[in-house]
Length: 222
Image (cartoon, rainbow, N blue to C red; front, side, top):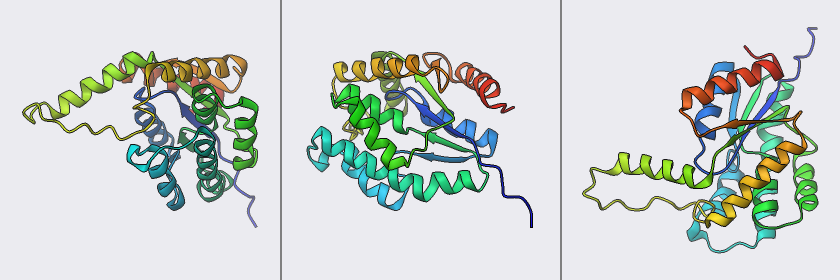
């Protein structure tokens, strides 16, 4: 009987809205041949929870309800996708994880950090990433960049573009997004061995080079 596969490594991309997490996570997963996943919504249950969490038309949610739904999504995600991949020896690259709950529901919504952390750890059964890459950018700069991309895509529609923003979090005010950014930076400063902060306000290939250097240094990924 052969030896069991070595556990895979677990890398998470974190950050505010429109900083390029999904693009860079997909690039790294492809480069590494890793399992690419995301939160919330990358399970059958998660898709329903994502609709409730992100769609403005789904109605108002209290901060506590929001945190509980995020935890439910994470519990299923870890059980169904992340842990099985890691135990099979596959690396996992995830777009958002526990750091997002701490930044958004903790710092952003004002829930107690220790409560959000404990809830997340219960959901994840103690599974923390080997590395959390924070793509950092001023929220106004990120929003302006996203708006410019929308305008470029939709400029041919005679100026009558329907606003596609249905994300409850994107629609929140600047003060919320600044609290989230400050929270992320505080979390990263408190645990530099697990976090790496990368300036995302630069061209994507330049950011990508820094990510490649970080994963090479921290995880030995070439």
